[in-house]
Amino acid sequence: MGQPVAALRRALAGTVGVMLFCAATALAQEPLPNPPTTPEFMSRFDFRMWAAALSYDDPRFVWDTHWAGDFDLVDYVYGRATFVADYEALLGNEYRPFDPYQSNYLLEAAGSIRFPRVEMFVVLNHVSRHLGDRPKRLGVAWNMLGARFLHHAEAGSTTIDVALEGGRVVARAFVDYTWLGEANLLLRHPFNANVGAFAHATGQVFAVDEVAMRGTQAGGRIEAGIRLKGRGGVMEIFGGYEKRVDAYPLDRVPQRWGVAGVRLLSR
Image 1: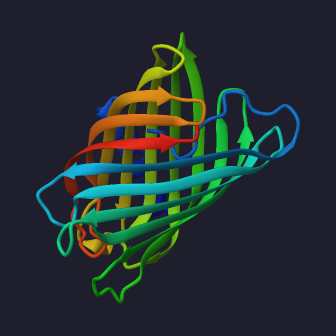
Image 2: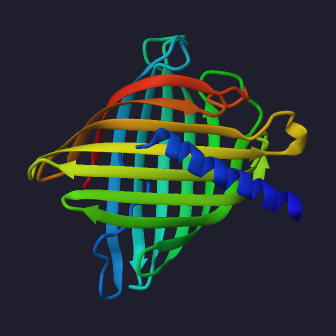
């Protein structure tokens, strides 16, 4: 019992440390500044898609693309039931100019309780990683059961969204992860009704099995850019830097790269 608790403490402490180091895009799940006052079915649906060029001298890592959606199935006023689906395709140029060699899937279900300043979720998610046009007989995947805390604040016209989460890996294939932690800090400041700026910092910590012959792994990403708002949605133009833990599914090696891209959001 002592070892898992100690691992969780190390993961959470490392997560906060990575977030502060980043010191400040969109969170996968954001707080609701104005939640419904009566129960509602399908009270929210958000969709995001983006593509970013990677400044890295490796033919496996040239582009990072995402298609993601999340929705509240039901909002019961004192909380909500939400679902998230995210598909990431990493493209290289090893075999062809746009070579989608890696696909990563995230599926998540969560339920929350609202408190005066914080919304707390119980989260169950599944991540699986796949290769395209390459041999891969091993399954690479994990399931995490944990908790997430969301907080929304305003300072004048600037909004501040914070998300902290941590959980235990309850099932896994190939990976050596035991506990996961993540922190997100998102700042948005509008210049007018249509143009604004944003900055986003995220940090991740992966506590690993003691027999893995490597210590706790930490990664993170920082972004900043311009936010352009139209009647039908939002475009973000951003640049940043990322350290990704175990960037290739079968190699337990982190990678670092600069990013520059465009993101489309439903709000």
